[in-house]
Length: 542
Image (cartoon, rainbow, N blue to C red; front, top):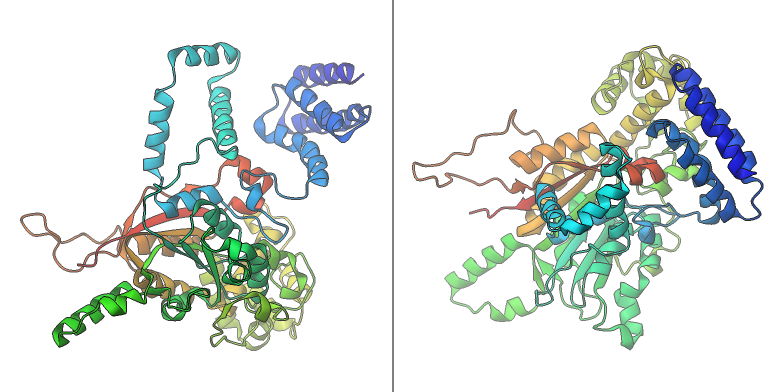
């Protein structure tokens, strides 16, 4: 019965595929409905998914955009059986948060591959395939188009990476390494990094949100000092994870004071401090060997910054980050639950945090200032109209109040495109307020121009995931020019007649071009669509 239904669907779609797009979508919807009926004849969930897959294969002329909508029925059914995101990084995804581009970020931190270098390695590996294997592959794909062949090759490569066949590892004779996850979140990236490290290595997991620290520390408990101290069998068998409650803008002042929970000694010292102490001790004629024994690391080997907000913060209505959920208009990153944080986090460094909330901004700022905020931090074309509507709707206490104020002057759909619609406008408004509440623009300047250059040793990596234009623009300028403001087209490097660099070097060297999440990850984790990965290598300051 299923096969008969599939034949009917195939003939119907192929005979009517020359119709306009609206007609095509009508037949795609009809195909999805008939497929669901055909799948009902299967007695198990797996048989139903197989029925969908068989029918979807038969509908060859359907484009990837339309077939993706048809396949959503299969995805929904599988997600009911397995609620975790179906990604290559599913081993590191939890209901709290799914890490974006986990493998790419960890490879960049470890210096294994990055950008164009990784592409060259992959091309060389492909060119070494035996001639017989290439012929067999061409015969199997003789009926497929060139684009379909490339898509199949990408899927095979991703499947090999998912199975761990193409994972490169660091040499075994390397010295211990120190890394910083400046935006810990749910601990997905830290979990992926700790799986690739060996005993003696250390990872600082830093976050300002107490809820994120609590969830990540519980997840990575076996790597913490408390677990390794209580269970003697774990000592010397796993890398060390040290959670720290701090904003990433303050890490250069916080991390040098953190002690190893097992030995009690300080874990690291800034590279600049080592140079200053060495010069001072040499002038005084003292020996620096005893002082160096107290410090395990000088600088960090890599720093990861996953900017933006986590899935848990968006999905929690009480935090006020999402316009789709009714809750208080708060948006403060440090406004999580502190009830269990003292027991789960071994090192807590609570700095001064501003008390302003999104409701305070909406109720106290004038029209001119609200207009500036929406234009600068959200690129909002209706900034003044929305600011006026917010002032007229005062007082605002919940996210629903703000949504109603914006909806009063923004239509649900717009002729000029989806960017002018209500949903996209609300996203920009909430983003603008969140940036101001958490001082994200000033925090980016501090971490890019102070904390990261001070922490990362020469030769170390800075890996940044950004999600909107302001963050990506700042990341690009810092890695290229060393400053968030940057210079148009990049400042020219001054050299003498012999080619030697004159003056101060730039702090970072760009590695490869920016990278985006692949289609397979975006399909199952829509929040990865806007992610942009950039990598820089720390230069010698001499």
